[in-house]
Length: 127
Image (tube, rainbow, N blue to C red; front, top):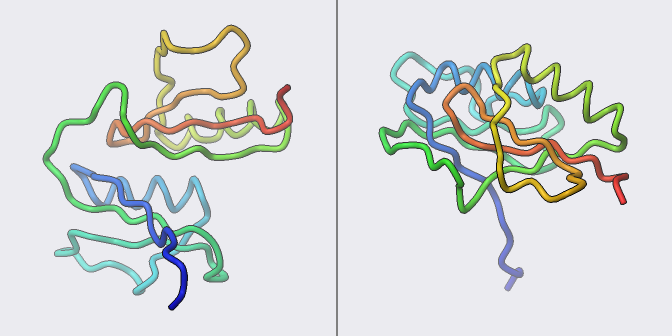
């Protein structure tokens, strides 16, 4: 028997098409089952080569949590790359989140996607 493993992270979206467009541009991912039709209420995005973590977007009317118990961490390799990615993601529709829980010298920046879902951009070189 194969060991249990995480297959897909699922995030809720009030506007599925907008969420799919944002995350496709943000991550460079593609829909696993081809382009979603107008009635689609669930879309799985995967890396173009098929290897790596998948992100599923599911239609939801549940309210977004201000301090979510689960969120995505997107990794960068340097402070400069982190700053550039934050700006790129903001240009795609993400917004900076006022976060009073930042430690004194954070290695992450908290953003929200077009649906309000919180995620972090992490500088993995930070000490």
